[in-house]
Image (cartoon, rainbow, N blue to C red; front, side, top):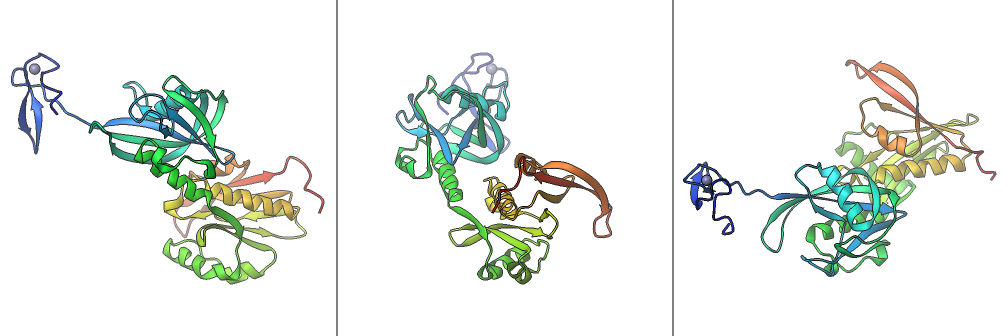
Length: 318
Ligand SMILES: [Zn+2]
């Protein structure tokens, strides 16, 4: 690194010396060792009604190219704070972070290395207007996205490609043809075993799959017990490499839609009290309506929560 020629502490010229198993700039006068580390940056993939938020850069590097709202972290802020601040500065919108999306290592045009921390986020306020270092800020539907060679950075291209992939997932009732793939998932990921052949035949059991262009990437089930107006939502499973993209939320939403079509008034589900997925249910409108403890497989007692979903108004007449 040629640009670091003098000691920042005493001004003496630095020398390249072996420190441990690396050669680093070292000050022979005061002993200062210059560590050169990647610079952390943070940003957001903000989604609203199926659209993603992009800005067109007004300043180098890559002026004129489209990018996700992101920028370098300040010394006194957390990654989360930096992501929220950069989004506000570049787009005028206030966002709340939903989940960590991905972490990318990168090297920019000047060979500065960095780490980009991207979060999924949603809008909670503000007004869309491009900030000082953005020429434009706007929403894109999947089919409107700028071509990849107009996206500023490879990390952002990667994140948008992943987002597009998730947009291709459809949610539907499982059919007999899905059973072999579902058995494989259950086996491979050691999930609770369900009598799937019964599930697809029995009218009071509805098995729902997330289908990514022919591949099952997640599932859940909902059980009706007429004449009871209560439906029971079962375990929700999403392939580990497809998590954090809202597939679980969509499976739950689809199950709720099915329940409403069947005139259920209440949907309940049970979840281990320590399971962070509780947040996903609460975001869909579930409330905690009960708690119980029960030994898990002859092990220690575990606390479970009952979560309930009710509709604000009467079910539709069909
Ligand atoms: Zn020095």
